[in-house]
Amino acid sequence: NRRVTVRDLGAAKERGERWPMLTAYDAMTASVFDETGIPVMLVGDSMGNCHLGYENTVPVTLDEMTMLTAAVVRGTKRALIVADLPFGTYQEGPVQALRSATRLIKEAGAGAVKLEGGERSAHQIELMVQSGIPVMAHVGLTPQSVHAMGYRVQGRGEEAAQQLLRDAKSVQDAGAFAVVLEAVPAELAAEVTRSLHVPTVGIGAGAETDAQVLVWTDMAGMTAGRVPSFVKQYARLRETLGEAAKSFAQDVISGDFPEARHSFS
Ligand code: KIV
Ligand code: NA
Image: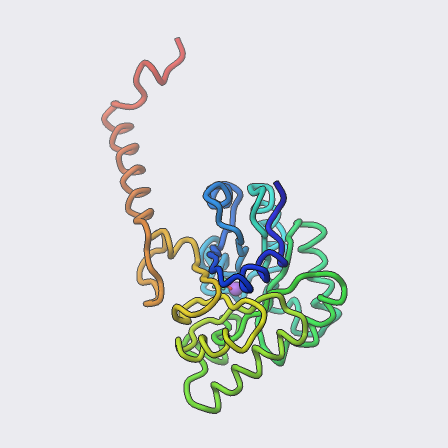
């Protein structure tokens, strides 16, 4: 009855077992995924768009990440909880990264942290890992760089593919226990997966990565409007919830709710 550890995930790769990861931003949703047996949850900075109503992930603060990570930790018993380092909380250098990560581990109770960037983030990863903090890396499309790179497929063309391979190798060498590959051609993601001994976690990276991650609101059909083409929607939660709210509203207006059994005598 212990939580999943980063060693369990390394062992899964050796056995050739794939595993699922979902984002979570609150205790109640996280408890559903935990009871279902989702082994790893990411308190992603996608909370910016999916939970806090920002335009993108850039405005998310360390205070917000700390608060929501603590909620997800409280709502779960088994899953490994990975917290994203928000934009601006690690780019200044290894010491800033260590300070930010320490807060997410000590104060919020995360089991690991994640940050964006390949070679450019290797020194940060090294210091955090040396300090005893498990680190998940994230290469390919890195949404915190939206103002520089936009949202498009990465690693297309020989030169970009070689750079992506170097980025993945460099975060592994720095001590990352897993690497997210976002919006990368399937063949390149497969090559990265074969050439690393740590697990790869794909999102829009084809079927050959060791694990798959989706933003939970995309996965469950809660997100408004269009979702990326790499998303599969397993439910229509937005429609279901909207219908429930509409029925409640109609019952209040008509006087059908509450009934005697919902009232105290
Ligand atoms: O913030 C997030 O949800 C992520 C995943 C898409 C990997 O970083
Ligand atoms: Na993220």
